[in-house]
Image 1 (cartoon, one colour):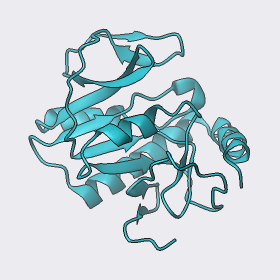
Image 2 (image 1 turned 120 degrees about the horizontal axis):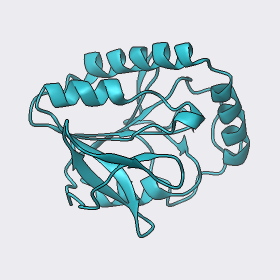
Image 3 (image 1 turned 180 degrees about the vertical axis):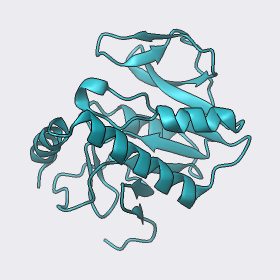
Length: 191
């Protein structure tokens, strides 16, 4: 199936989730992530702030957990059409940008590239780790810049069903997908 079709299907599926379902499914994804990856003090995690109108999963539970355990937290911010990583703390000030996304007020790029985990938003992910986002390409560019050792982890309410037919050569697949029911690894998947 083409990305444009999958984008439409999964935006609609998400739209039909209640706020209680979003909260419940987010908690299950969080639990699966913690149990599988077991993050520890001093690790570095890049994680997105959700776009609430698109019913993205609640990542605040991750952020609170990481900050309470001395895990360094970085969030994306788009500055001059490029995704940068801003380190946040419990007292970081946020503002809402033109897209309705909460971002740190600071434009200070941490310039960190050796994250332990990058927790990535997406609308859909197939069985090979190919993802469908919102079509802006920010994360593919970001994935090209970060350390090859960084675990690129997608989080989604839905498990893979269809393959993505129009994967581009610049698309960078995820290493893992965490859903409410599974943690899928895409290492060593044959073509």
